[in-house]
Length: 310
Ligand SMILES: [Zn+2]
Image (cartoon, rainbow, N blue to C red; front, side):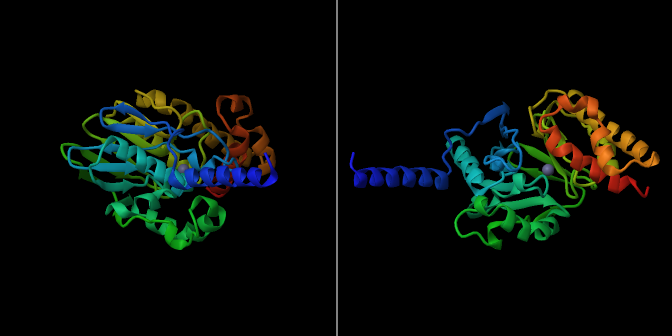
């Protein structure tokens, strides 16, 4: 092969891989129908600086007789496009709603892929202001995840905001949406498919991957108790495997958060420096969670700040 042929071939392969990326190639996009009409894509357990950081959250959709609701759209327009393509491989019904469970990038940056569907974007009462607050940060931090020539319009915020609870009908399929006070984040929302009693918990529930605290530890501990009372059969967490029991879905996270609360209070009372508390708290349980070393010190620091003046 001469030099020009080689360069042409390289250019050709590069062009193909670029176009595959831009078009949202779905060949590696997992999707499971967990229960009748509820389709879930399970995200990867990689850190935020990994090149696959845009595909770490569980996202999916619910199909009714009349239309479809999407629940979270992934951490890039590419992931959102892949989800959109998968939906279209299963159903041509209109996509009535895109519901975002909260503000974190891995759940919302794919929204743009649904912009042309005459979709209503739905979220917690505080989600629109949460996205406004983060818009510039997303644009700077996740520029490569926002397609070609990204600008502030690449990030779509919800227009229908949920203050407490609301029911929406997809056609013989009622979804119950419920907004929570500050816990994992400042704008957590759950979705329940009433037909199948399936809970889409967003990041109120983490499994396998260590929970990340960005809202309020006291709030989250309280919400965990409330989740236990939900009448649900199947649980889809924001990260990690699905479960057919709410108790087993939250058991490990509840223990982690309670321990974080108790141990942080003790460290503060003992006058420990936060850096020492990061080392000491939960030391014996680190093996129970994936990515513990990346997230746990941040959780301790956040807990420390919250509890220092209680
Ligand atoms: Zn989150």
